[in-house]
Amino acid sequence: MADESRINISNAAEIVTARRQGRVLAVQLGFDGSELTVIATAISEIARNILEHAKDGEVIISRCNHRRKCGICVVARDSGPGIADIDQAMQYGYSTHKGLGIGLPGTKLLMDEFHIVSVVGQGTTVTMKKWRH
Image (cartoon, rainbow, N blue to C red; front, side):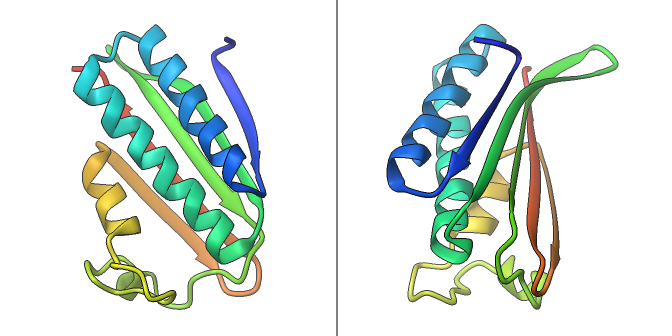
């Protein structure tokens, strides 16, 4: 596998593909068992959000480095409706689709870095990183 994978997200099977590709790269980067599960879970959640809210988008999974740190970077982006109130969306328990409301805030807790940019009517980009310890 290359150091970057781009996976279009427009159906449930592609969520599985994104999760698998993230796991493969994470293994290559030296992450251990529990970290592999965390990374795969975060990718699943963020890809599921694309499908549920925007209908399609993409997930880009790549290696990232910062000084002496090595890790995995996941960028999820769509051209969906966007998020009107990011602060509200990041509150644990808030849901627009009758879910548990743990998707975005839960994903943020799983990863070491999490950044979200959203413009109503233009879409959302989530960038998250997990560093190997």
